[in-house]
Image (tube, rainbow, N blue to C red):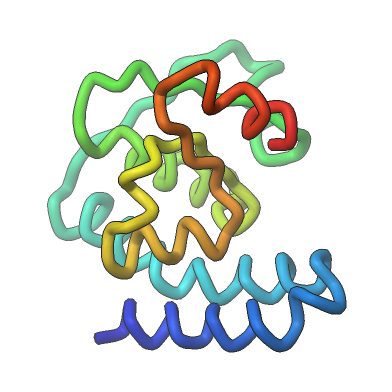
Length: 137
């Protein structure tokens, strides 16, 4: 139920704020989306007690969450995006993180809708169809 409430709030701001100010909409949506996403992070991080280790040199660790980055998941599981969210949350940049997902993900109730409202990029896995989407990114 809480996820659906978040989606409704996102829809309201999408209709009322985004046509006039995309940047203001994104600032608001960042906070609203985190309300939902943090619940999933809690499930992974605390309830399921999954241990996540990040290995990097000291310089890279100091920069995490302080500048733009492109993080590629190796897609070794169906929840690699959720592990990415855990890492983004720990770095303090969960709300402003984006992902490139397969097109079908945006139709997933609650989570997919939240990703769509958050301007995630959805691909069809066909270069002829996705080239312009990626360039517009």
